[in-house]
Image (tube, rainbow, N blue to C red):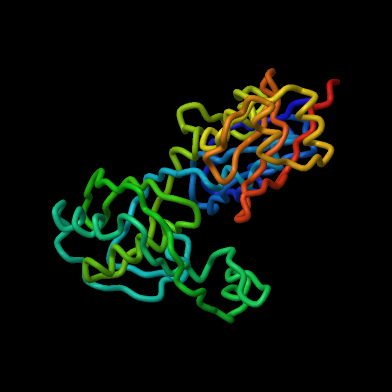
Length: 296
């Protein structure tokens, strides 16, 4: 049966869960999942995992994401986006390209970011957004995120549209808030579109209801950041059955010396067999195994 990823374009106004449910109906698949939840007001790339690919979502999170975000200055809401409750306003300074470029530069690299109160982060076992909705707002500690690249696209009155390429765990809503603070005002997101997620691009996405017409990415295609080691089917089956991994085994299979802490084992035909990783004692451990897709 189908096993792999399909890139859908989530429309505004629905949750990522509903988009996945619509896609699953189109595909006729009961075993589906998704990577990188988008807020209901946001649009864009949402990778849908099917079958054995649902096991690979955790590795897709390690890839870079690109967003086009419209920041509205002079207002603050509880959710840090246009859908939230207004809690403050402030004067909007002159929005020059130089000023915004300078603020964007300060956001690049590894930074400490305070997550929004409305987020899926857990505090004492409870989601922040559940606490906020129940009138018990809590703050998550700031955490390190990586902003690879930023660029100003456009300025219009009290708004600026920017492009952001970032690593996992980055909240673009928090980024908007912090850019506003650097410019001496409040700021929220008025629009957000994810244009890429690892190898998935907006240009090759399909509507959720048309998921069955989308291109099916193999698990290997979806995880190009992992070092791929090709092994014969018999060896892959031994790994699937939990055989202990060591350097001698890898060398016998002609894989050479692994240089990454985590890498994938693939059959000659392209079937994804497992992800293994090198531990601190230089031994190897099977992290995840993938079954061959069952034929109809």
